[in-house]
Length: 114
Image 1: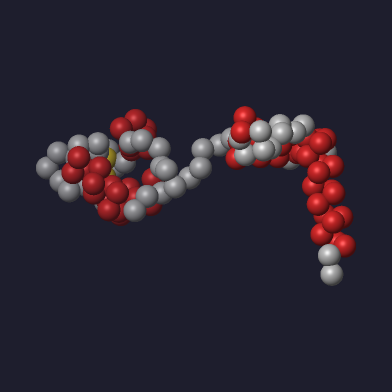
Image 2: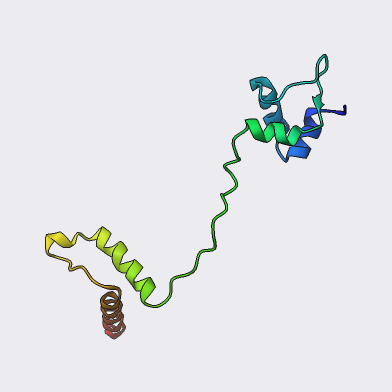
């Protein structure tokens, strides 16, 4: 049976020594009997089984595909409809193609302003 210190356990687990100390204090890890040392064998499994995942690392997601063409304009139109309530009669619900034309007209008009 190999015994390790809290600092060595922290290096093995990729955590701060204070995290390991808190795990010992809360009972998630325990010292070997009669010592202030941790048992090395299986420490990774014991720690992972009793500790929730780190939150500073984002969870793995599938690859996101960038929106292109009308898909992008459709997403913008849906978002815009969420901001501007079409039921009030002021803003019509636009499709992605209509929104692209509308924005293009605004850009052309803006270019003509000195």
